[in-house]
Image 1: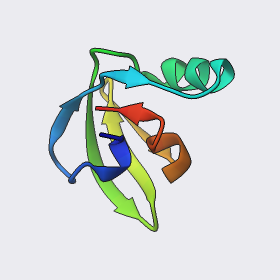
Image 2: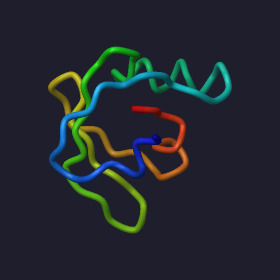
Image 3: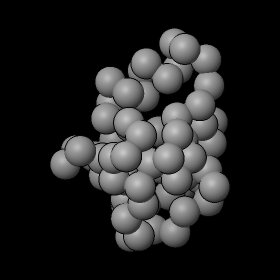
Length: 69
């Protein structure tokens, strides 16, 4: 399921990062890699703040939909 559907506070393992090559590379540089753990901290209007690789990152709903957990 996409990251945008995950409940807040639950750690999830990233299964796959989709999208165009450019988008995948951008997300991988932020720490969204297959096998990594991601936790949703909060969500407001579809925009999310997530913990990934011991960092907090803000991503939009369109990006969250490309990250499968």
